[in-house]
Length: 501
Image (cartoon, rainbow, N blue to C red; front, side, top):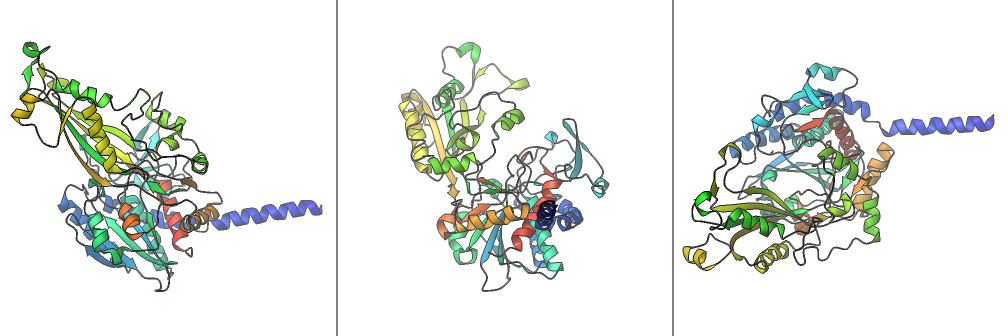
């Protein structure tokens, strides 16, 4: 009998501790639902990064909200759009944690959205494979976690910003200060590769420095478990243009005689990879070694391979790595767009004058982006192409058999923070203790964020704290944020904000 009571006592203590670890759960749900109207009003502001006038309205909204919370807000002017820097002092002697977010969004094509206005938030529930609009009054019910808010930037990246604002607003109302000084760095042209960020880091170095930078962007792991991301790939871009006749020519008259630039470019592109999807450009994967310790980290991430194939409806995958996690530890070469002639109802019987390919190269820490770009150029030359950085002159067109114009730029390099760094352990322990399970540790994310200058210039370690659902359609039509992720994100931020660093 005594043994029975001992076991019972242990179980009671266990479940009591488990409940205590989620002390912000009910609070986060209450304040999260109260904040929905504010979230909707923010989403209603168009935020195409290519439209500065729209961005100015978003800057004004964010500044007003932050000042109401007691932040000191400063505008950091750059050669492009400005950054907002907001400081909230807890105590001078305490460390400073910086949070990076971007509040601009991708452009929208309203004809591709299943709602009248992509900027007017719509609440939807899933019925079979479709999401159907429902009344916002449904949020007063109990089973609401799987409802979705559909609007541009709901997940990328206004959602995480409002989650953080909601958590901070609660602490302010409760008369509680954060466990450290806070610095918010708000980017308004991340979707345009943040051209002003690198110079801002150098120009405002003293104002931007911090003890740790948390990146509030991107989705959690497909398991929906708490996730931390310790690195992101960088990105470079290339434009390749092949040339045919000076102007399009009739394919009946000149087919079999005038070379087609679309075919020439296709051959050039196809020569860059083997049938397994591996880049064959010399030196492209140099310097990358997935040792036993690295593979152990990668193997600790629950496999997503089957789920990715099911979601994207592909049978086979490229074999750069043995798994999805391995594959994103390498640089990638991706054709993101092709253009030549006309297609569909506009198709014409012509030999096009040009063919153009837009390429992105995702970079890893071990990669030298300029060496990779030079490798592409050398590869093309070895394939028999004359590679120019300008449109060919008549003399060049008449003297060279195959010409490709190549332009390129490096948007930003990759970064990575050690998973076993003191900052990484601190953050991992917070989530592990709060949720009573170890977070998913992502060594490197496949995507890119432009914060590498903070790591390289300022020496600030950076870690991503993603909160949104993986299937959020970011950058695409019908972007959405799952209500459960929105509420849990607020909960996670409350746990982090109140944990001593």
